[in-house]
Amino acid sequence: MTYIGEIAQEIMCVSFDTTCEKVDMLFQEDPKLQGLVVTEDELSAGLITRTNFYQKMGTRYGYNLFLKRPVKLLANNSPLIVDYFTSVIEVSKQAMGRRDEEVYDDVIVRKDNAIYGVVSIKELLLKGADIQANVARYLNPLTLLPGNYIIDEKLKNLFRHSSNFTFLYIDLDRFKPYNDLYGFRKGDEFLQFTATTLKECFSAPDCFIGHVGGDDFVVILNHFDFENYCQDVIKTFDNKVQYFYSKEHYAQKTAYGENRFGKMEAIPLVSISIAIVKNDYDRFRNAEELVAEATRLKKICKVKSGSCYYIEPSFVS
Image 1 (cartoon, rainbow, N blue to C red):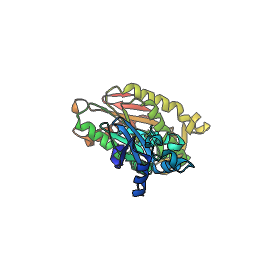
Image 2: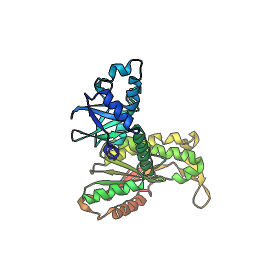
Image 3: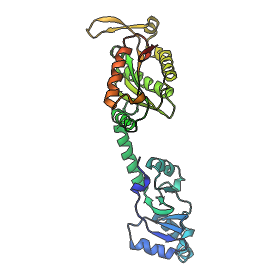
Image 4: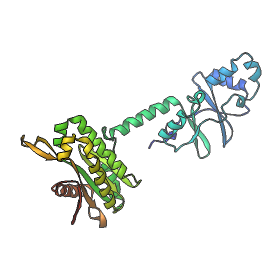
């Protein structure tokens, strides 16, 4: 989270009744000055930009009409004003939603009911692009789900607070033969379908979904009510898996491909396995122990053909 106040710059403030003649003098004295905040009190603020000021003053009767009059007559008296702790992304949305004639105006930042500074659209766009680039580094590029770095941080944070939670390690069975048979494009579509299924089934705010890489995913719940979620995932997955096979392969429930020894064999359809680990009673000291247990259970889960979920001591399909 980057707050807009972190990139705000100081700006000169003048009162509402400052004359346009005085404002003209300020702009003339400082060619780099692109705008002024116009204030009446701590709750009211306007904005006058250099461009707008001289556009209005430069009309046929502008100087004669406004020179001795207060600048509030030329200022935008309803500019975009945001709190210091508003996110840069949120401010970007608000700024781009303004009227066309205001879309490039500075954004005024307020902190503790006082004017803190302004942010130019140039700085706002640059910071937004920087944030997006940083976010992209931590997301899986195919599914746009959080990658390993964010997953690790999530687990570390949970263990710091000794939270009770459920960790689900999700894996696709026989995905490699499918990828070899149908090609990487179809394989990528299959992984995106899996990610979409997880997003749909784990849509509650307390569900965290991550993509470890390849066909491995994780889900973290801050409770132990996992069964309905798992049943929903398996039902949704199995109902839609047909769209990733030819009619012949789906009808036969098998597809011929090379096994790990290079020999052709009938390979069952891709299924989904979910290994479940509950961190009840603080069973694990750290994330490494938790993941190791989940990996062990996943191997047990994959022994059974067809989609299933597994938690010791019960096996449910």
